[in-house]
Image (cartoon, rainbow, N blue to C red; front, side):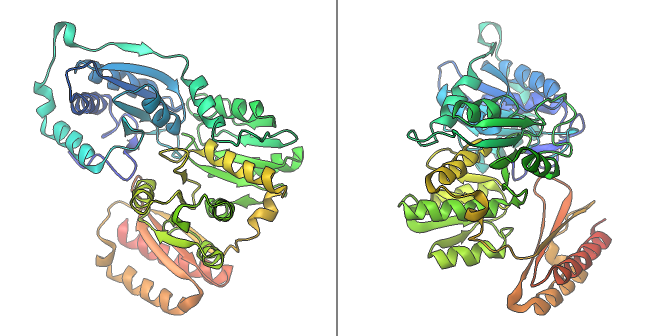
Length: 449
């Protein structure tokens, strides 16, 4: 079997390897086995987003877990960070999320959280993979009263709503704010409108009617055109776009202009630093962050630490360096004083709190960070040889870096979750940036197809 786990769990086209019911059943069995570290009764939470294939994978995982003598708590569609929270809250031994995040509906994935609400360690993922790939898990079979049960839990959404609201300052409300919410027809479609409404905002919700196949379909954090129009039509204070599983946030200001995750990091870093809440006066991001964020943090006297691309690597460095804020340009933001993982709703609440506390429009807050022209091209690939071994691409990369000098940068990497090579260029002008990015992307396409 090929390697199962990527940078964010297991992901692929649903009902094709590795995302088949058979593999999900084996993963459920292996995950349950590694949870059984004591003689007590063990429990695993399973949540999902709104994809059609979630039913298939949910039942397969449930069967596998129960076959190992572990009970299952089924909570239905809940944002990924909600499963991280509820795993801790219910003192379960693990939490499993069935989701492919921002990917189209035909894809799906499996993410596993440990009992403390953090994503499963590389070591435990490797143990699960070994049990599945070697078939060793097949010989471990409890019988009779030792098999597990499955329970449907109905109050999870209420618990998660309270958790999110508690990350918003208790002395503030959202009275007078009009918010446009794009729920991506995904896991936030129920909870997000309730949370912001209960805090006092007038909420205009959109893309909140999932049908199993419309998740992320021209909506959500990667497709904000509808949200931009709605913000202008409604004269909203701000637009908030989540992705399919609710762990990302992209905002749109009152003028209809989108803010990246980098903008939100800059705003929150400044505010937290002024209030002594930015631990070690440092922020963790990745090489995908805009050069403008680096410039802004330097001006503010805030240390910039760089992790490998992927929220798990951001989190690892945050914990290692005792940092309270980190994230990615894509809108995956981690407020470690509030949660163990990225949470789009929690991120939105921190941004709204700053708007309320400062009395400033979000466009004014975002103006502290200049956005350098950036071009990102995703090239679909058939194979992933080490990039340093692709001679033509390396030669073009060297030439592009020589041309840019200290006025920009180039970053090329493979996606950890999709068959893609991501080519990113930042430069002094849009024309230069686009020309270099398109040239590099064409070379990648030619060599990696």
